[in-house]
Length: 426
RNA sequence: GGAGAGGUGGCCGAGUGGUUGAAGGCGCCGGUCUCGAAAACCGGUAUAUCCGCAAGGGUAUCGCGGGUUCGAAUCCCGCUCUCUCCGCCA
Image (cartoon, rainbow, N blue to C red):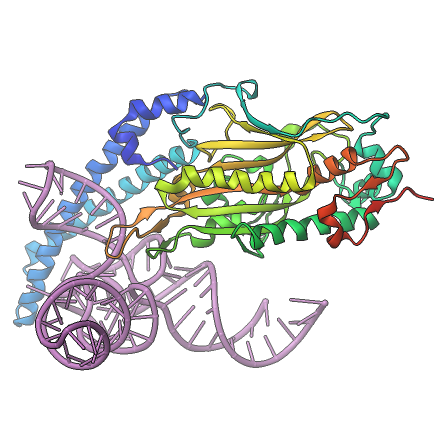
């Protein structure tokens, strides 16, 4: 959520920042509502002050054994009605203002590249070379099926298109990856592991920025109004909702593996083969609550932590800095990490690391006290995949495939898998 | 799912209609004392919002929302969460 104070103070700055990401539109209506709201509050406060004064006097009379003057009571009854009217007015205005604010995305940081589409993203760096194999490389959907580790048809039988099942070496590979990633982030990068609910309340989805705007992408349980998380970012963001964190408690860094659920109605027809785009997948997510002045530097560290995973797995990757038009709703700056997949010959987005500045903190009301006795401030929040499992599995399968169709397990994973090769079926 | 109890400030805990944003205690911050610390003593210690350059002032908030009243932490209604017991269950 954007600060209404900022919009009031410098609407042109806000308008221009929003335009950079392709959000055009006037803020005049919002400012008008805000002005009316403040006027109504002022009048209401004045009336309440009068009523409080009169009530106090009546109280004193009563204490002295006298009755309340009827004309005053009559007048205050009227004042009370006016107050009720103004309260209703303020409430209506605030609802309208809130509804508008909830739909406005975060402002890109000034140093985010210009551009409205992904073509304007900037390749910040690359590690390794997109390799070509010296034999015909298979895409993972063929490889995995031939290895008997992914069963697409039976996934569909259970849950419909874009669901799959993994078994044997495949299931084990994923579990190994999850364990290894979590151990790396907790052991070497300083994150604390979390185990989280994957069904959350509506207001939790609002806090992270997924609702109200992106309801179409979410699965929802009607009976209890619970929402299935699209990423662990959602519950982690809300861990400290409505709290004021004490001085010296930042940064707080968390990592969590959860299933992620994405309806993605809009993406129907895209990437239908394999496990590149599915409705349910596992992801290891990194998350940081930090002091505002440190968030830019923390974003760089977050990206580095995700890159480390790629490097140790030996997966060629590149880091993209997203242009203003391509960063996500809550983000002020985003880097994507794309890993190379030799079978389908594509760079696959395996991580997206964002600095959400105070955008989510405002929505979820997460503050901290910079020093003892100081005024509370909103924290900054950052999130990044570390990493999303299916696309890492795609890259490992496709890049490490052998001429006979078997797949070599990356060295770092072997203590976790207990095998160093996914063998072909006999 | 059924029955009951309860949600007051960072924590504990008073308070059942009238200057109560809220006694008291603990904690925390500052000070006195001390070589220093502890103890003791003194003072301070919520958040939001509106007006204002500021100083300052107003208003709101005792789980949430409504109602009664000149006036509600206190009374009424609804919701929600927590706890206990029963039931069910991995």
